[in-house]
Image (cartoon, rainbow, N blue to C red; front, side, top):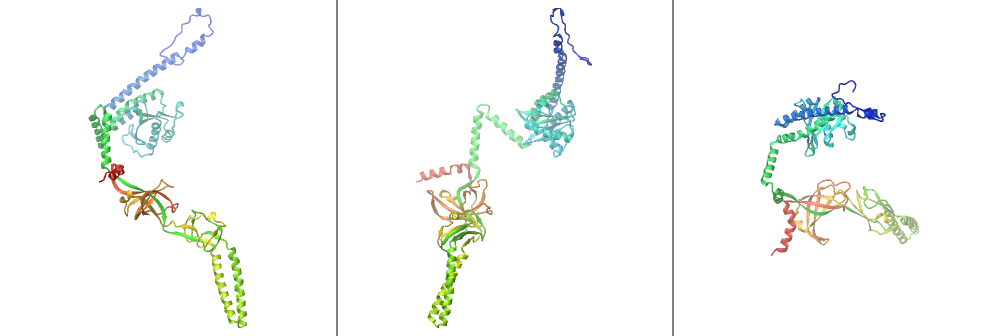
Length: 500
Protein backbone atom coordinates (compact mmCIF):
# COMPACT_ATOMS: atom_id res chain seq x y z
CA UNK A 1 0.00 0.00 0.00
CA UNK A 2 2.33 2.67 -1.35
CA UNK A 3 2.04 6.23 -0.08
CA UNK A 4 0.02 5.31 3.04
CA UNK A 5 0.59 4.06 6.53
CA UNK A 6 -1.83 1.11 6.91
CA UNK A 7 -3.18 0.07 10.26
CA UNK A 8 -2.78 -3.58 9.33
CA UNK A 9 -0.57 -5.67 7.09
CA UNK A 10 -0.49 -9.25 5.96
CA UNK A 11 2.69 -11.33 5.76
CA UNK A 12 3.20 -14.57 3.86
CA UNK A 13 5.59 -17.29 5.13
CA UNK A 14 6.56 -19.54 2.26
CA UNK A 15 8.66 -22.70 2.54
CA UNK A 16 10.26 -22.98 -0.88
CA UNK A 17 11.85 -26.28 0.07
CA UNK A 18 8.45 -27.91 0.10
CA UNK A 19 7.29 -26.28 -3.12
CA UNK A 20 7.91 -28.26 -6.24
CA UNK A 21 6.52 -25.61 -8.56
CA UNK A 22 7.21 -21.89 -7.87
CA UNK A 23 5.72 -20.57 -11.13
CA UNK A 24 2.25 -19.80 -9.73
CA UNK A 25 3.48 -18.19 -6.49
CA UNK A 26 3.27 -14.62 -7.80
CA UNK A 27 -0.24 -15.26 -9.06
CA UNK A 28 -1.38 -16.49 -5.63
CA UNK A 29 0.26 -13.50 -3.98
CA UNK A 30 -1.62 -11.09 -6.23
CA UNK A 31 -4.89 -12.82 -5.47
CA UNK A 32 -4.38 -12.19 -1.74
CA UNK A 33 -2.87 -8.71 -2.03
CA UNK A 34 -6.24 -6.95 -1.56
CA UNK A 35 -6.95 -8.63 1.76
CA UNK A 36 -5.43 -5.80 3.88
CA UNK A 37 -7.32 -3.15 1.93
CA UNK A 38 -10.61 -5.07 2.24
CA UNK A 39 -10.03 -5.56 5.93
CA UNK A 40 -9.26 -1.87 6.41
CA UNK A 41 -12.40 -0.91 4.46
CA UNK A 42 -14.47 -3.22 6.65
CA UNK A 43 -13.02 -1.65 9.79
CA UNK A 44 -13.79 1.84 8.47
CA UNK A 45 -17.37 0.90 7.63
CA UNK A 46 -17.83 -0.57 11.08
CA UNK A 47 -16.53 2.58 12.72
CA UNK A 48 -18.70 4.76 10.46
CA UNK A 49 -21.74 2.58 11.19
CA UNK A 50 -21.17 2.95 14.94
CA UNK A 51 -21.01 6.71 14.56
CA UNK A 52 -24.28 6.70 12.58
CA UNK A 53 -25.97 4.55 15.20
CA UNK A 54 -24.86 7.00 17.89
CA UNK A 55 -26.12 9.93 15.80
CA UNK A 56 -29.47 8.20 15.30
CA UNK A 57 -29.80 7.57 19.04
CA UNK A 58 -28.96 11.20 19.79
CA UNK A 59 -31.60 12.46 17.38
CA UNK A 60 -34.20 10.01 18.68
CA UNK A 61 -33.50 11.18 22.25
CA UNK A 62 -34.28 14.74 21.20
CA UNK A 63 -37.40 13.63 19.32
CA UNK A 64 -38.70 11.69 22.29
CA UNK A 65 -38.28 14.77 24.46
CA UNK A 66 -40.34 16.88 22.02
CA UNK A 67 -43.99 17.53 22.73
CA UNK A 68 -45.06 19.20 19.48
CA UNK A 69 -44.90 18.10 15.88
CA UNK A 70 -43.44 21.36 14.57
CA UNK A 71 -40.68 21.25 17.19
CA UNK A 72 -39.85 17.63 16.38
CA UNK A 73 -39.80 18.38 12.64
CA UNK A 74 -37.32 21.22 13.14
CA UNK A 75 -35.15 19.02 15.37
CA UNK A 76 -34.80 16.21 12.85
CA UNK A 77 -34.08 18.68 10.01
CA UNK A 78 -31.49 20.64 11.98
CA UNK A 79 -29.78 17.55 13.43
CA UNK A 80 -29.54 15.77 10.09
CA UNK A 81 -28.19 18.94 8.46
CA UNK A 82 -25.55 19.20 11.21
CA UNK A 83 -24.48 15.57 11.43
CA UNK A 84 -24.45 14.90 7.67
CA UNK A 85 -23.01 18.32 6.66
CA UNK A 86 -26.05 19.21 4.56
CA UNK A 87 -26.71 22.72 3.29
CA UNK A 88 -30.42 22.20 3.76
CA UNK A 89 -32.73 19.44 5.03
CA UNK A 90 -36.53 19.55 4.51
CA UNK A 91 -39.37 17.44 5.85
CA UNK A 92 -42.54 17.02 3.77
CA UNK A 93 -45.73 15.27 4.90
CA UNK A 94 -48.44 13.79 2.70
CA UNK A 95 -51.66 15.80 2.92
CA UNK A 96 -54.24 14.23 0.64
CA UNK A 97 -52.79 13.80 -2.85
CA UNK A 98 -49.87 16.20 -2.32
CA UNK A 99 -46.82 16.64 -0.10
CA UNK A 100 -46.78 19.71 2.17
CA UNK A 101 -43.49 21.11 3.45
CA UNK A 102 -43.57 21.02 7.27
CA UNK A 103 -40.04 22.05 8.26
CA UNK A 104 -36.78 23.33 6.74
CA UNK A 105 -33.49 23.27 8.61
CA UNK A 106 -32.57 26.54 10.33
CA UNK A 107 -35.69 28.30 8.95
CA UNK A 108 -38.57 28.74 11.37
CA UNK A 109 -41.01 30.55 9.07
CA UNK A 110 -41.34 30.25 5.31
CA UNK A 111 -43.91 30.92 2.60
CA UNK A 112 -45.30 27.60 1.33
CA UNK A 113 -46.53 29.20 -1.90
CA UNK A 114 -43.11 30.15 -3.25
CA UNK A 115 -41.85 28.57 -6.45
CA UNK A 116 -38.88 26.90 -4.74
CA UNK A 117 -41.12 25.06 -2.26
CA UNK A 118 -43.44 23.97 -5.04
CA UNK A 119 -40.47 22.42 -6.86
CA UNK A 120 -39.25 20.86 -3.60
CA UNK A 121 -42.72 19.42 -2.93
CA UNK A 122 -42.81 17.90 -6.42
CA UNK A 123 -39.39 16.32 -5.85
CA UNK A 124 -40.66 14.83 -2.58
CA UNK A 125 -43.75 13.50 -4.34
CA UNK A 126 -41.47 11.64 -6.78
CA UNK A 127 -39.87 9.77 -3.90
CA UNK A 128 -43.23 9.24 -2.16
CA UNK A 129 -44.97 7.92 -5.27
CA UNK A 130 -42.12 5.54 -6.12
CA UNK A 131 -41.69 4.56 -2.43
CA UNK A 132 -37.90 4.51 -2.61
CA UNK A 133 -34.81 6.60 -1.95
CA UNK A 134 -33.87 8.88 -4.82
CA UNK A 135 -30.32 10.13 -5.39
CA UNK A 136 -29.67 12.98 -7.76
CA UNK A 137 -27.61 12.72 -9.81
CA UNK A 138 -28.95 9.19 -10.26
CA UNK A 139 -26.80 6.20 -9.46
CA UNK A 140 -26.33 3.27 -11.81
CA UNK A 141 -28.80 1.07 -9.95
CA UNK A 142 -31.42 3.86 -10.01
CA UNK A 143 -31.47 4.48 -13.76
CA UNK A 144 -35.08 3.29 -14.00
CA UNK A 145 -36.40 5.80 -11.44
CA UNK A 146 -38.14 9.03 -12.44
CA UNK A 147 -36.11 12.04 -11.28
CA UNK A 148 -37.49 14.90 -13.42
CA UNK A 149 -38.59 17.00 -10.44
CA UNK A 150 -35.26 16.44 -8.68
CA UNK A 151 -33.49 17.57 -11.83
CA UNK A 152 -35.63 20.71 -12.09
CA UNK A 153 -35.11 21.54 -8.41
CA UNK A 154 -31.34 20.97 -8.68
CA UNK A 155 -31.09 23.22 -11.74
CA UNK A 156 -33.16 25.97 -10.15
CA UNK A 157 -31.32 25.93 -6.80
CA UNK A 158 -27.87 24.93 -8.15
CA UNK A 159 -27.72 21.98 -5.76
CA UNK A 160 -25.11 19.39 -6.69
CA UNK A 161 -26.46 16.40 -4.73
CA UNK A 162 -29.96 15.60 -3.45
CA UNK A 163 -31.14 12.61 -1.45
CA UNK A 164 -34.85 12.01 -0.74
CA UNK A 165 -35.73 9.39 1.90
CA UNK A 166 -39.39 8.26 2.24
CA UNK A 167 -40.66 7.77 5.82
CA UNK A 168 -42.77 4.62 6.03
CA UNK A 169 -45.38 3.89 8.68
CA UNK A 170 -46.95 0.42 8.61
CA UNK A 171 -45.30 -0.21 5.22
CA UNK A 172 -46.85 2.92 3.70
CA UNK A 173 -44.89 6.05 2.78
CA UNK A 174 -46.39 9.07 4.53
CA UNK A 175 -43.54 11.62 4.52
CA UNK A 176 -40.23 12.45 2.82
CA UNK A 177 -36.94 13.75 4.18
CA UNK A 178 -34.92 15.59 1.50
CA UNK A 179 -31.25 16.40 2.07
CA UNK A 180 -29.08 18.75 -0.02
CA UNK A 181 -25.31 19.15 0.01
CA UNK A 182 -22.31 19.58 -2.30
CA UNK A 183 -20.74 16.15 -1.63
CA UNK A 184 -22.32 12.95 -2.91
CA UNK A 185 -24.10 10.82 -0.33
CA UNK A 186 -22.30 7.55 0.28
CA UNK A 187 -23.90 4.16 0.67
CA UNK A 188 -23.30 4.08 4.43
CA UNK A 189 -24.79 7.56 4.84
CA UNK A 190 -27.87 6.53 2.88
CA UNK A 191 -28.30 3.48 5.12
CA UNK A 192 -27.86 5.64 8.20
CA UNK A 193 -30.56 8.07 7.04
CA UNK A 194 -32.80 5.13 6.19
CA UNK A 195 -32.42 3.76 9.72
CA UNK A 196 -33.09 7.21 11.20
CA UNK A 197 -36.23 7.60 9.04
CA UNK A 198 -37.58 4.22 10.13
CA UNK A 199 -36.97 5.03 13.79
CA UNK A 200 -38.30 8.61 13.72
CA UNK A 201 -41.45 8.16 11.67
CA UNK A 202 -43.49 6.62 14.49
CA UNK A 203 -42.69 9.44 16.92
CA UNK A 204 -43.34 12.11 14.28
CA UNK A 205 -46.66 10.51 13.31
CA UNK A 206 -47.78 10.36 16.95
CA UNK A 207 -46.87 14.01 17.52
CA UNK A 208 -48.65 15.07 14.33
CA UNK A 209 -51.74 13.14 15.42
CA UNK A 210 -51.71 14.75 18.88
CA UNK A 211 -51.32 18.19 17.29
CA UNK A 212 -54.57 17.92 15.33
CA UNK A 213 -57.50 20.27 15.93
CA UNK A 214 -59.98 19.82 18.77
CA UNK A 215 -62.75 18.16 16.73
CA UNK A 216 -60.41 15.56 15.33
CA UNK A 217 -59.20 14.71 18.83
CA UNK A 218 -62.80 14.28 20.03
CA UNK A 219 -63.48 11.91 17.14
CA UNK A 220 -60.43 9.88 18.03
CA UNK A 221 -61.46 9.86 21.70
CA UNK A 222 -64.90 8.54 20.81
CA UNK A 223 -63.32 5.78 18.73
CA UNK A 224 -61.05 4.81 21.61
CA UNK A 225 -63.98 4.86 24.05
CA UNK A 226 -66.05 2.52 21.92
CA UNK A 227 -63.02 0.29 21.41
CA UNK A 228 -62.65 0.01 25.18
CA UNK A 229 -66.39 -0.40 25.65
CA UNK A 230 -66.62 -3.27 23.22
CA UNK A 231 -63.80 -5.10 24.88
CA UNK A 232 -61.39 -7.55 23.37
CA UNK A 233 -63.75 -10.50 23.07
CA UNK A 234 -66.04 -10.75 20.03
CA UNK A 235 -65.20 -7.19 19.10
CA UNK A 236 -65.96 -7.78 15.43
CA UNK A 237 -69.44 -9.18 16.05
CA UNK A 238 -70.32 -6.43 18.53
CA UNK A 239 -69.08 -3.74 16.19
CA UNK A 240 -71.08 -5.28 13.34
CA UNK A 241 -74.22 -5.31 15.50
CA UNK A 242 -73.85 -1.68 16.56
CA UNK A 243 -73.09 -0.66 12.99
CA UNK A 244 -76.21 -2.45 11.78
CA UNK A 245 -78.38 -0.74 14.41
CA UNK A 246 -76.98 2.69 13.54
CA UNK A 247 -77.44 2.04 9.83
CA UNK A 248 -81.04 0.91 10.42
CA UNK A 249 -81.78 4.07 12.41
CA UNK A 250 -80.27 6.22 9.68
CA UNK A 251 -82.32 4.45 7.03
CA UNK A 252 -85.49 4.91 9.09
CA UNK A 253 -85.00 8.53 10.17
CA UNK A 254 -83.04 10.43 7.54
CA UNK A 255 -85.30 11.70 4.71
CA UNK A 256 -84.21 10.93 1.19
CA UNK A 257 -85.58 12.35 -2.08
CA UNK A 258 -88.21 10.02 -3.51
CA UNK A 259 -88.60 9.99 -7.29
CA UNK A 260 -91.18 8.31 -9.49
CA UNK A 261 -90.04 6.72 -12.73
CA UNK A 262 -91.99 7.17 -15.97
CA UNK A 263 -91.37 6.70 -19.68
CA UNK A 264 -91.59 9.68 -22.02
CA UNK A 265 -91.67 10.62 -25.68
CA UNK A 266 -90.80 13.96 -27.25
CA UNK A 267 -93.65 15.52 -29.20
CA UNK A 268 -94.25 18.80 -30.99
CA UNK A 269 -97.26 21.08 -31.18
CA UNK A 270 -96.56 22.00 -34.83
CA UNK A 271 -96.97 19.08 -37.24
CA UNK A 272 -97.26 19.84 -40.99
CA UNK A 273 -98.92 17.38 -43.40
CA UNK A 274 -98.11 17.89 -47.09
CA UNK A 275 -100.68 16.29 -49.47
CA UNK A 276 -100.30 15.77 -53.22
CA UNK A 277 -101.83 18.80 -55.06
CA UNK A 278 -102.99 16.72 -58.07
CA UNK A 279 -102.95 13.23 -59.53
CA UNK A 280 -99.59 12.37 -61.01
CA UNK A 281 -96.26 10.63 -60.62
CA UNK A 282 -93.26 11.42 -58.43
CA UNK A 283 -90.42 12.62 -60.62
CA UNK A 284 -87.59 13.46 -58.15
CA UNK A 285 -87.02 13.36 -54.37
CA UNK A 286 -84.53 15.62 -52.57
CA UNK A 287 -84.90 14.61 -48.91
CA UNK A 288 -85.38 11.58 -46.69
CA UNK A 289 -86.90 10.95 -43.27
CA UNK A 290 -84.89 12.65 -40.53
CA UNK A 291 -83.58 15.52 -42.65
CA UNK A 292 -83.79 19.05 -41.24
CA UNK A 293 -85.27 21.60 -43.65
CA UNK A 294 -85.60 25.34 -43.87
CA UNK A 295 -88.78 27.00 -45.10
CA UNK A 296 -88.81 26.99 -48.92
CA UNK A 297 -86.41 24.05 -49.30
CA UNK A 298 -87.36 21.65 -52.15
CA UNK A 299 -88.77 18.30 -51.06
CA UNK A 300 -89.87 16.53 -54.26
CA UNK A 301 -91.04 17.19 -57.84
CA UNK A 302 -94.12 15.73 -59.55
CA UNK A 303 -94.02 14.82 -63.23
CA UNK A 304 -95.75 17.57 -65.32
CA UNK A 305 -95.21 16.15 -68.82
CA UNK A 306 -98.87 15.22 -69.20
CA UNK A 307 -99.94 18.59 -67.78
CA UNK A 308 -97.76 20.41 -70.32
CA UNK A 309 -99.50 18.52 -73.12
CA UNK A 310 -102.90 19.43 -71.69
CA UNK A 311 -101.72 23.05 -71.45
CA UNK A 312 -100.84 23.05 -75.15
CA UNK A 313 -104.20 21.51 -76.10
CA UNK A 314 -106.13 24.03 -74.03
CA UNK A 315 -104.14 26.92 -75.49
CA UNK A 316 -105.01 25.69 -78.99
CA UNK A 317 -108.68 25.29 -77.99
CA UNK A 318 -108.80 28.83 -76.67
CA UNK A 319 -107.42 30.16 -79.98
CA UNK A 320 -109.96 28.07 -81.94
CA UNK A 321 -112.88 29.28 -79.82
CA UNK A 322 -111.77 32.88 -80.27
CA UNK A 323 -111.83 32.44 -84.04
CA UNK A 324 -115.26 30.80 -83.96
CA UNK A 325 -116.55 33.59 -81.72
CA UNK A 326 -115.44 36.23 -84.23
CA UNK A 327 -116.80 34.21 -87.13
CA UNK A 328 -120.25 33.85 -85.59
CA UNK A 329 -120.22 37.53 -84.65
CA UNK A 330 -119.62 38.55 -88.26
CA UNK A 331 -122.32 36.12 -89.46
CA UNK A 332 -124.71 37.52 -86.84
CA UNK A 333 -125.13 34.06 -85.35
CA UNK A 334 -125.58 35.17 -81.78
CA UNK A 335 -126.42 31.76 -80.30
CA UNK A 336 -123.36 30.09 -81.79
CA UNK A 337 -121.23 33.07 -80.70
CA UNK A 338 -122.36 32.67 -77.07
CA UNK A 339 -121.62 28.95 -77.22
CA UNK A 340 -118.12 29.65 -78.54
CA UNK A 341 -117.60 32.29 -75.85
CA UNK A 342 -118.67 29.87 -73.10
CA UNK A 343 -116.38 27.16 -74.42
CA UNK A 344 -113.52 29.67 -74.49
CA UNK A 345 -114.15 30.66 -70.86
CA UNK A 346 -114.29 27.00 -69.85
CA UNK A 347 -110.95 26.31 -71.57
CA UNK A 348 -109.40 29.40 -69.95
CA UNK A 349 -110.41 28.22 -66.47
CA UNK A 350 -109.18 24.73 -67.22
CA UNK A 351 -105.90 26.22 -68.46
CA UNK A 352 -105.56 28.19 -65.19
CA UNK A 353 -106.04 24.96 -63.23
CA UNK A 354 -103.42 23.14 -65.31
CA UNK A 355 -100.98 26.02 -64.95
CA UNK A 356 -101.61 26.05 -61.19
CA UNK A 357 -100.74 22.36 -61.04
CA UNK A 358 -97.59 22.94 -63.10
CA UNK A 359 -96.51 25.85 -60.91
CA UNK A 360 -97.03 23.72 -57.78
CA UNK A 361 -95.43 20.56 -59.10
CA UNK A 362 -92.32 21.29 -56.98
CA UNK A 363 -93.25 20.56 -53.34
CA UNK A 364 -91.49 22.95 -50.95
CA UNK A 365 -91.20 22.94 -47.15
CA UNK A 366 -93.79 25.25 -45.62
CA UNK A 367 -91.64 26.11 -42.57
CA UNK A 368 -88.55 25.03 -40.65
CA UNK A 369 -88.67 21.51 -39.32
CA UNK A 370 -87.67 17.86 -39.61
CA UNK A 371 -89.09 15.16 -41.89
CA UNK A 372 -90.54 12.65 -39.42
CA UNK A 373 -92.56 10.38 -41.71
CA UNK A 374 -92.56 9.43 -45.39
CA UNK A 375 -90.35 7.04 -47.34
CA UNK A 376 -89.79 9.59 -50.09
CA UNK A 377 -86.70 7.92 -51.52
CA UNK A 378 -88.83 4.88 -52.43
CA UNK A 379 -91.55 6.93 -54.18
CA UNK A 380 -89.72 7.90 -57.38
CA UNK A 381 -92.02 6.98 -60.29
CA UNK A 382 -94.86 6.00 -57.96
CA UNK A 383 -98.37 7.28 -58.77
CA UNK A 384 -100.03 9.58 -56.24
CA UNK A 385 -103.57 10.82 -55.98
CA UNK A 386 -104.71 14.26 -55.06
CA UNK A 387 -104.87 14.52 -51.26
CA UNK A 388 -102.43 11.67 -50.52
CA UNK A 389 -100.05 12.65 -47.68
CA UNK A 390 -96.56 12.74 -49.15
CA UNK A 391 -94.69 13.50 -45.94
CA UNK A 392 -95.03 14.78 -42.38
CA UNK A 393 -92.77 17.52 -41.06
CA UNK A 394 -92.46 18.44 -37.39
CA UNK A 395 -91.19 21.70 -35.95
CA UNK A 396 -88.44 21.39 -33.31
CA UNK A 397 -89.23 24.78 -31.77
CA UNK A 398 -92.30 23.90 -29.72
CA UNK A 399 -91.33 20.54 -28.25
CA UNK A 400 -92.89 19.09 -25.13
CA UNK A 401 -92.64 15.86 -23.13
CA UNK A 402 -95.47 13.33 -23.02
CA UNK A 403 -95.10 11.20 -19.87
CA UNK A 404 -96.66 7.80 -19.21
CA UNK A 405 -97.00 7.26 -15.44
CA UNK A 406 -98.00 3.92 -13.91
CA UNK A 407 -101.32 3.98 -12.09
CA UNK A 408 -99.74 3.10 -8.74
CA UNK A 409 -97.66 6.31 -8.82
CA UNK A 410 -100.12 8.80 -10.30
CA UNK A 411 -101.22 10.00 -6.84
CA UNK A 412 -97.60 11.09 -6.21
CA UNK A 413 -97.64 13.41 -9.24
CA UNK A 414 -99.41 16.75 -9.58
CA UNK A 415 -99.26 19.90 -11.66
CA UNK A 416 -95.98 21.72 -11.09
CA UNK A 417 -94.01 18.60 -10.14
CA UNK A 418 -90.34 18.93 -11.08
CA UNK A 419 -88.28 16.17 -12.63
CA UNK A 420 -85.55 15.21 -15.06
CA UNK A 421 -85.48 13.24 -18.29
CA UNK A 422 -82.74 11.09 -19.78
CA UNK A 423 -82.73 10.07 -23.44
CA UNK A 424 -82.00 6.52 -24.51
CA UNK A 425 -79.67 7.91 -27.17
CA UNK A 426 -77.69 10.06 -24.67
CA UNK A 427 -78.03 8.61 -21.14
CA UNK A 428 -75.05 10.57 -19.76
CA UNK A 429 -77.00 13.84 -19.51
CA UNK A 430 -80.31 14.76 -17.88
CA UNK A 431 -82.59 17.73 -18.54
CA UNK A 432 -85.09 19.40 -16.14
CA UNK A 433 -88.83 19.41 -16.85
CA UNK A 434 -92.04 20.56 -15.13
CA UNK A 435 -95.35 18.67 -15.18
CA UNK A 436 -97.89 21.02 -16.75
CA UNK A 437 -101.01 18.87 -17.14
CA UNK A 438 -102.30 15.41 -16.23
CA UNK A 439 -104.90 13.78 -18.44
CA UNK A 440 -107.59 12.38 -16.09
CA UNK A 441 -108.35 9.37 -18.31
CA UNK A 442 -106.07 6.33 -18.27
CA UNK A 443 -104.86 4.31 -21.24
CA UNK A 444 -104.02 0.62 -21.56
CA UNK A 445 -100.47 0.00 -22.77
CA UNK A 446 -98.47 -3.21 -22.52
CA UNK A 447 -101.24 -4.73 -20.36
CA UNK A 448 -100.75 -1.95 -17.79
CA UNK A 449 -102.92 0.99 -16.78
CA UNK A 450 -101.12 4.27 -17.37
CA UNK A 451 -101.91 7.97 -17.14
CA UNK A 452 -100.60 10.52 -19.62
CA UNK A 453 -99.06 13.76 -18.37
CA UNK A 454 -97.68 16.68 -20.34
CA UNK A 455 -94.38 18.21 -19.28
CA UNK A 456 -92.66 21.37 -20.41
CA UNK A 457 -88.92 21.75 -20.82
CA UNK A 458 -87.18 24.09 -18.39
CA UNK A 459 -84.34 24.67 -20.85
CA UNK A 460 -84.13 25.28 -24.58
CA UNK A 461 -84.20 22.07 -26.66
CA UNK A 462 -80.87 20.76 -27.92
CA UNK A 463 -80.20 20.79 -31.67
CA UNK A 464 -80.17 17.00 -31.86
CA UNK A 465 -83.58 16.52 -30.26
CA UNK A 466 -86.24 15.12 -32.59
CA UNK A 467 -89.96 14.41 -32.12
CA UNK A 468 -90.47 10.74 -31.30
CA UNK A 469 -87.34 10.35 -29.16
CA UNK A 470 -87.93 8.39 -25.96
CA UNK A 471 -86.28 7.81 -22.60
CA UNK A 472 -86.81 7.65 -18.85
CA UNK A 473 -88.15 10.43 -16.62
CA UNK A 474 -87.61 10.79 -12.86
CA UNK A 475 -90.26 12.92 -11.15
CA UNK A 476 -89.86 14.39 -7.66
CA UNK A 477 -92.41 13.00 -5.21
CA UNK A 478 -91.29 14.44 -1.89
CA UNK A 479 -88.92 13.01 0.71
CA UNK A 480 -89.23 9.76 2.63
CA UNK A 481 -86.94 7.51 4.60
CA UNK A 482 -84.93 4.89 2.75
CA UNK A 483 -86.86 2.12 4.50
CA UNK A 484 -90.16 3.57 3.24
CA UNK A 485 -88.78 3.78 -0.30
CA UNK A 486 -87.32 0.28 -0.20
CA UNK A 487 -90.46 -1.44 1.14
CA UNK A 488 -93.24 0.72 -0.34
CA UNK A 489 -94.22 -1.84 -2.96
CA UNK A 490 -94.12 -4.65 -0.40
CA UNK A 491 -96.32 -2.74 2.05
CA UNK A 492 -98.81 -1.80 -0.69
CA UNK A 493 -98.95 -5.43 -1.79
CA UNK A 494 -99.68 -6.57 1.78
CA UNK A 495 -102.45 -3.96 2.16
CA UNK A 496 -104.06 -5.10 -1.09
CA UNK A 497 -103.99 -8.73 -0.04
CA UNK A 498 -104.97 -8.40 3.61
CA UNK A 499 -107.51 -5.54 3.70
CA UNK A 500 -111.05 -6.30 4.94
